[in-house]
Image (cartoon, rainbow, N blue to C red):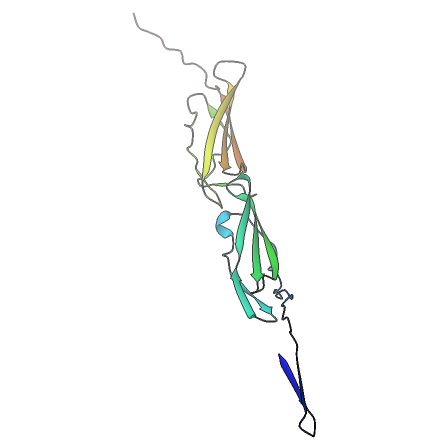
Amino acid sequence: MIFTATDACGNTATTSATFAVQDSTAPVAPEAPTAVTVACASEVPATISLTATDNCAGEITVEGVDTTVAGDCPNSFVITRTWLFVDACSNETSISQTITVNDTVAPAFVEELPASLTVECDAVPTVATLTATDNCGEATVAFTESTEQGQCANAYILTRTWTATDECGNETTHTQIITVQDTVSPEITIQAN
């Protein structure tokens, strides 16, 4: 830039100066979204765009970028969602949001659960087929049965157990105890000769 000075008699003097314009101010970011904890991957909030203000560039709008750290199952992980605001002079500011996915909800059985009961030896019910639903997806049902023998062949206790398990190992268990007894006396039959 050239500066010229002129006095009342028309004498002039000139000089020059060089100015360096440098932007060293980082953009001012908005407040970071609050941390969120959800049960299922399907509940993770969608990525949004946020806007920062810059002293030279005005508004800078960027979309969040996710970094995921896996957990032990499909519905157990942590997302760090980061918004990085960079102006034309590479000054930058960032904010982050933590999204925790943690499925702690056990599955639920669909059908009516079989009740414990006492029956005669010829009336033991068949094994019920149970299914289960889960808040985050699929659940499997495993069945086991054990027998505790009583004082005679037709007196025993059946213990039937159904265990519903989701993808993160959350379990719901139902147990049915069937007490089997033989209280009917034998009948005497006489055969004719």
